[in-house]
Each structure stands twice: as structure tokens, then as C-alpha cells.
Length: 398
Image 1 (spheres, rainbow, N blue to C red):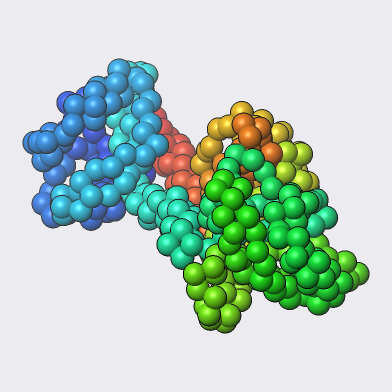
Image 2: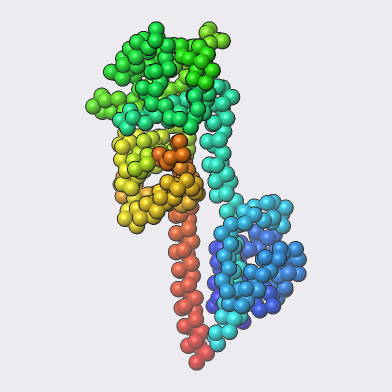
């Protein structure tokens, strides 16, 4: 059969095979033969004789293609002949004879195992960090000073004996401190806010749930903008009632380790409030878009995208406010105007049954997008070659 489509399949850089109406092979790409460890000539042989253990839904997809339907499976876990479990994306579509009758189907597959593994890592990285905090019994706090917003972990509430459904503001924190210690704590914090940068204090509190008197060690650090105004504070607390001689170096480093963790993550971390205003980004997130952390704080989420993606972001943010989490791809704009494609794992932040913002973990997929673009260009080039070949064949036949 002198078919231009057959030529396209044989020369394709993708994992693709061409079948007739009886599911017999007409052509395959080299990638197809390599992926499925095929060394013999299979042209003319039936697909199900070579792969006899096809799941029923694959066979039905082939039949649907032979009926003229296009079937796409975005992702599915499968087992290759070499015994390795991998994730694939597959595509079934019909091809037609000159009289518009269906001549058979084209079947393409793509290995997406690496991307799925990356998604799995993204889903577990914050979970691992939470387990570390719980095991060490360290309460973490992050205070957006300009917005007067405080983010606390579960251990923080546990140490203070507070219900984690009730938010804790700066005044609430001061009210829990023993009257004899409060002036010392405030002096230490004010010194840090007025340029001292580092904050350290040890004081007594009465736990709210059991009214027990506990000694608390609080260690933190203040960040300032270019004008010298404090914009953010972060740190850690630990109950030292039973361990008054606990190494101060260990405690001081707790807050630093939290910041180090956030800023050495390969993934970007981005938090916004209920108005989509940026309340926190780590170094990776800021660098991904070409900004500093200070430049992004206080800016709207929507200022980092074009009009098309802004409309999409507004809809997705509405879903966050409804309490929905999601994994999706998104295109942001770099500071230099270039495109930044990201895989986004977004989650709402709910407090007292009220939506107060969202947090997302983002990883760049620019390299994958570039590869997809290269593939698309290659397909276009091959399609042009097919059109040219068809033209020649028509001329020669006439």
C-alpha cells in the first residue's frame, strides 16, 4: 500500500502504530518497536496475537476507533512487556480511505511516568514536613506584619492548649502571657521590630484548656523592606517546662530551619488571602517568576498573568473559596514577559469554617512544554511532507 500516512507513521518520532480494520499491523514507528520490545517483523500480524492480554476497555477503545470515534485516555497505569509498571497517555483515532471509508485506526502511547512521580512527590512533601514538626513538638508561626495575618501549625495550638478552630491574633497571644512576664516579652519583640531583627524570649503562660502553668521558649526573626519597615516575622515555640536546660542553639535554629526548608524547596510555595493578595512566597517561587520575595508580597495573584489566564485564575480562585483543592497546569508571566508554565497544587485555607485564603505548591514544567512544542513542530513538518507526497502521488497516478 503506497499510503502517505504509512510513511508518516514509519518516520514518526512518537510511539505510534497503524492498523487495518482487522487490527493487523500496517506500519509502526521505531519507538513503538523499542517500547514494546518487538524484534520480529510484525507487519500483517494481528495486534491481539502479539499482545493477547489486553484489558477489555482497551479493546473497546479500538472498536470505537474503527467505528469512527476518537478515544483519548489522559493517564493510566499499565505494565509494559518488560514487567515495569508505568503511567501512559494513549490516543485512538480512525484513519480514512480516499472514499471516506474507515481504513483502520492509529494508536499512539506516551510514557508519563516521570510526571506522575513528580506529582506524587509534590503531594507528599508538605505532609512530610508536618510530620517532622509533630515529631519534634515544635510550634511554628509566620506573621505577615503588613497584613496582620498569622499562620500557625497544629503543634502551636497544642502547646498553648488552644482550639485550632479559633484564630490567634497578636493581642490574643499577649493576653495568654503571665502578667509578670508580659513587659519583658513586649520589649524583646519591640526591639526586634525596631531593627533588632532577631527575637528571643522565655515566658510563662496558662494553657487555655487545662489552666496549667507552662514555660515557653519563643525564637524568631524579623524581615524588613528596603525602607527599614518590618514586613514579616517567623519563628518557633517550644514547651520547656520539663526541659529548662534545653540547648538554646537547638531552639534558635528551629525557626531558621523552617525558613531554610521553605526557601530551599525546589518547588515554589505561594500563599494568598481571601482577596487573592500575596501573603507569602518562598525563594523558589519568586525566582521562578523573576522577582524577589519582597516585590511579590502584597501584590495581587492576578498581576502575574495575561488577560486570558487571569479569567481562568478568577474561576479557579472561586473554586478555592468553595473549599475545593485541585491539581492543574497554569501559565504565568515572568518579569521579563516570557511564559512560565507550572504544575499547580492548590488548596484552600479554612478557619472557623470560613475561607481566608489559599496556598499552592508549584513546579515549573517549562521544559516539558518546550518538548511538546518541538513535537508539535515536528508533526507539522511531517504533515507538510505528507501533503507534498500525496500531491506527487496524485500527479503520477494521473
